[in-house]
Amino acid sequence: MLKASIALSIAPSDWQQASHAALFGAGVVIIGACLGGVAAGLGGVAVSVWLWRQRAHALRGTLDISVMQAGIQGRFRPLHGTLTNAPMPETWVPLRCDYLGPWLIGLRLGGRRLWLWPDSAPVEARRRVRRLFHHPGR
Image (cartoon, rainbow, N blue to C red):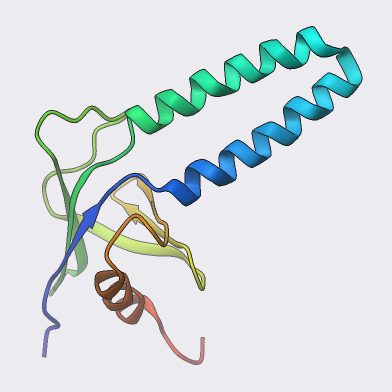
C-alpha cells in the first residue's frame, strides 16, 4: 500500500540564520584579533549584508512529497512573488534524503539541496518525512 502524500509548508528558518550569524561572528572576532578593528568592521558589514540577502532570498513555498511506483518523488511550489537564488523543480522529480539527523533533515530534490530545520516546517509534517526516510537497522 502506498503512503499518503505529504505537503510541507517551507518558511525561512531562524535557527539557520542564528547558526550562520554565530559562525560568521566568530570569524569577525578572529579577523579583528589578527588584522585590527577596521578589518573586523568591514567583515561585520559584509556578513550583515550576506545574512540579509540570504534571508530575503530564502525558500518559501510548499514541498509536496509522494510515494509513487518510480520511488519517492517531490516537487516544490513557491509562494507567488518570492525570489530564490536558484529555481526549484516545480514538476515531480526524484527526492532522496542525504542526511537524517535528530533535528535537521537534508533532502536532495532533483539536483537541488533543501534543508529542513526544526522551525522551517510544521512538526507533524517533519515527523512524517522522518518516518518516510527512516530505515531501522541500517
